[in-house]
Image 1 (cartoon, rainbow, N blue to C red):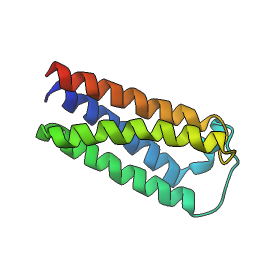
Image 2: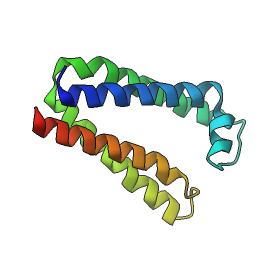
Image 3: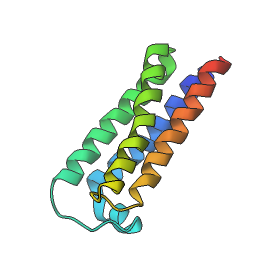
Image 4: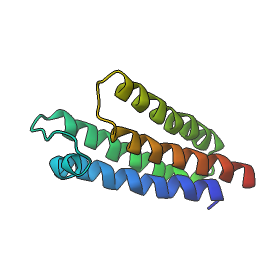
Length: 117
């Protein structure tokens, strides 16, 4: 597997764990990061979506698809931007930026790994 593939592969496992946690035990994660607990279905829906995106990452990582790697860099980097906007608009608490920072770190890792080949 290429260096970029490994970065995408490992990020996929982060998404699988995050998605499974949001689906199965959302309030454990929410309270850890000082978000209000919820019993609404939407947090679990998001968890399923995150988990499924994680599957894409894990299964696409070994394919050497530079298109997939590239689009993952752009989409993961945009997450931090969106989350900062959400916080600045008062729609979300500041700890949300931590999740965006993880996405940005993964995007940077993949970006430089693609240059390394």
